[in-house]
Image (cartoon, rainbow, N blue to C red; front, top):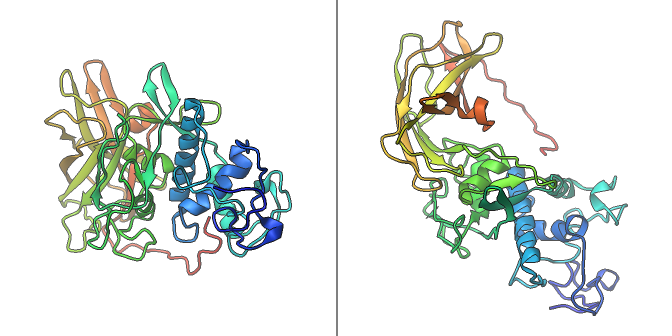
Length: 382
């Protein structure tokens, strides 16, 4: 716990600097802005901006905001100890190389920010939060617990949306549990965003990589929605994530495919939506569409059907199908767009086109070899 002018660590990120001591008064509680102060100092202390993928940092910002919203709605007061979230004043300003924003009232509107500060501002800017509840009251802030790391599987946390889920990308034998295990694994989030079993991207690649923070959050928090600052839903009810793709090749990379060939593939799928997938009067399948620049898209007639009900969150379901219908678009780079399908007596619904959840796209070289262009330098990555 801190008092005004305290220069010890935890009360300021700039230890011993009397000109940047604990900046709040002695009267408690004090009220500070969430967007322009609190989150900017929480996010870089909860995750390493330099080590974590920007998508995982955005997921962290959304979870941290949701956690704060939940306490506000409960009427509880958050303090700046590790009993809540790690809030250290001037943590944002101390990001290397330390720069004090030229617009202190709204730091992210400053013109002199360094690269790490820009990453944090980009993560906080969308002002999204994790919501739960039962329609139409499904806009309540979730108690979005999170933790550092765990191997293979998270742990249930006493809320309907904090159930244990498989986390196969967090499977390296050196991983040890760090934290309570409820909700989002911070390092796991960075692994999914990098598509690598190392959260810094330094280990072996995984067969799946997620590009959106909503995919990360829907994986770790079951049956929730992501909403923006106006309360609008950014996620549909019907969603899915691939957890693992098995290509049946020695390196588990997609094979070069040839017209006339057959290629078996297995996809482990998590139902990340708000409803279970029952097989009573409706049917669920994994399928795909082919796409190629200049040729558009064509849907495959191949389907892999569920044979049991698939509950939301856990356990995942593995689909096995054979790819043997490459369009006659000549050799070159194609895109295989995996998508879930819902069949009912009333119609057929692709999750992507009907509900707005993204396909999972894989680049396929057809009748190779295919030219691959690799950038020599990725500058200012965010």
